Image (tube, rainbow, N blue to C red; front, side):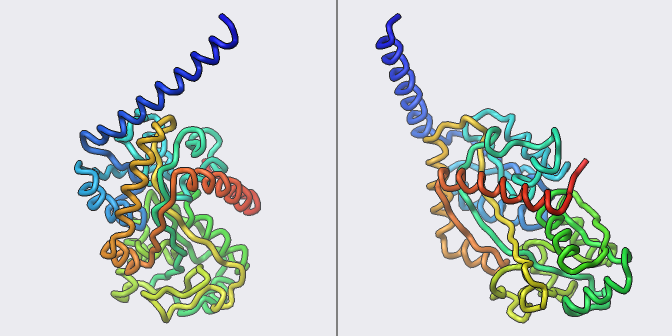
Length: 325
């Protein structure tokens, strides 16, 4: 077979794949879509997934069903989607801590976000808020740091799992503040918040959506936010910079992914539909009330961002000397 024949066959195969993907997009979706959330019900990840799922169901004309798959610091949910058929009917509502931190923390269990998954769209990002139990004898960041220094190893902080942004934020807080506090990992945000209210854990750094109701109800104390600006929903709470903790800026982001090899036409269709939902004024209002900023992207933009974030969090984890079993 000549080189020309091989080129013709290759072009023909490529065109066939494109036509197949286009036909799939035209008939998609014809049944319910499963949106895997790699955490327990409750908390920021679950809140945003549910905020997205109902209007997305209406937009697509089929049910978008939430499936909470908590455990192993998000590795269970991530792996479930990575192994699913690449047909657009099983999607991952990803959280940056579990997605781009896990490959640097776990030697074998983590899903490769670049090779095992494929991007659809960014959904939201938010700073962290530093909250404390009402029983902690501190009402400001500086009072918390002073107490922790006077009582090394006595205070603890919750996270939604090893490698989660709250875990990394807690370790960064320890380093910048020069304090010794103990890490208590949970399988998700829900249990951490319950135990924070009862003072089973003392401190928690998390996305605002998971704790805004408890802050407003006076069940826990908000000491600082890790963004550049204060949150409109809790305007009296200072930024970490304002509170005297310099260089403590980080955020969480949440995005939609599909299994690797999902046809581009399906991913583009889903991204467009997600973009429509995120432009809904009522959805934006509900997200803003929870301290979350909605953000849409193309699959290509999210793919490039995923790669840069994978490198960034790898550096943060190596600098902090973090590992996970």
